[in-house]
Image (cartoon, rainbow, N blue to C red):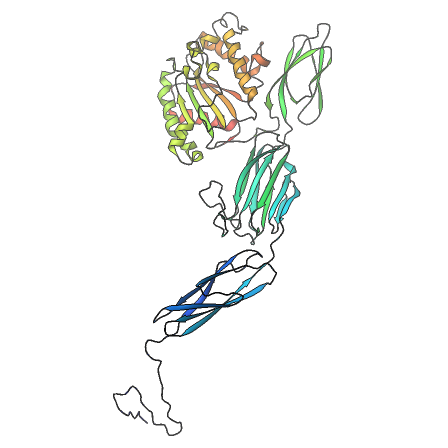
Length: 533
């Protein structure tokens, strides 16, 4: 049956139905809708004693909110209230009722689950060997890991964080201590973690890698010392688990040094004993005046019969060269003889420094050209450090280990010279065994500076000997350098450089080559010393 309307201008109508009574449908009055509300909780899983802020977020479609009334475990009549809990009531229910300007109300509930604050863990030691995997559970405080497997290692020691599926965002600060000296390695976790105080990132500007994303902390160990390496983890808030594996380099070596031994017994031979890199005892017999260069563990060389002299040199690495790195604190000084004999090489060497070498090193300086130009300097003035004109033809005199940059931790001198230096060879032409006073003064100064350097790799001197005309002076100078490098013909011990692994001669470098050639020669020399490029 169709609708039957009464008063067509009325908003009501009735429908005739033979089986059901007619019910009027009354819509709500226009302009009188109820409000809506929910509770925003600043921390719904706080520790006992923490302060939590609860805020009623209310809206009214056709008016305004005029009042707030809190109940349950809260009380107050403002939009927001604060709550704390010192007794362990795990779940607390908070309620708020809001009223709009038409008298309509709405109510919302929120539950805060309190938990007991864990007691900090302090200096809980764990011994870690190379290859070990540490699975750390939640804690607040500090934990100490003794990296006992790295004492005799040289190269990159890696603390590789693993993705276990449960690693989250809470930051943990890691410090590394070598023989009592502590350096902050940085934070692992998210610096944007919600906490009362911000968590600093390693560079204090960006967020570190999240523990959910595997990351590796790398420690470059350039010698068999230090032998006490400790990793300390500090969790300022409740840590949410992490795992790491200790990866060690393959090169293993007890610390050894070059020693020049000389027999001085006038009535017989001198018998020297010492301990080698493998811990084995060795014996050498030398006649009076005979010398030999050996590699021995420190404080193990002795003259068992008659008398003898022992002079300690630089570190030796019989089982492998330690790995060295280029970083933003590495300074490279490119020296060039400007006496005129290398005029054909000046442009190529300058182009190499400004282009190929820059392309190779720029990433280590954060792709910052200004930083590169400050740390990699091209120097053609031999008086720059010495201030003495007599050094013009004495390249050993250039090798001052004084830093040019205040931010440098390691200095590498790249010295490009002509293979015919008269200052060291004037007397050498008539007496191949002559050791000029200029040479003795220069080499003594260089050795003194090297002795003052703590770690191998902090100061490196590479001399590139560029081959020019093969005249008589060249032949004598070449022989002279062989003696210096090999410690022969009286150029042993403090008179030479055969016992200093920090000083390297690159012989027979071709003259009149392009910048690519000199760049490759330079990189080959650095990688040969153990630089990771």
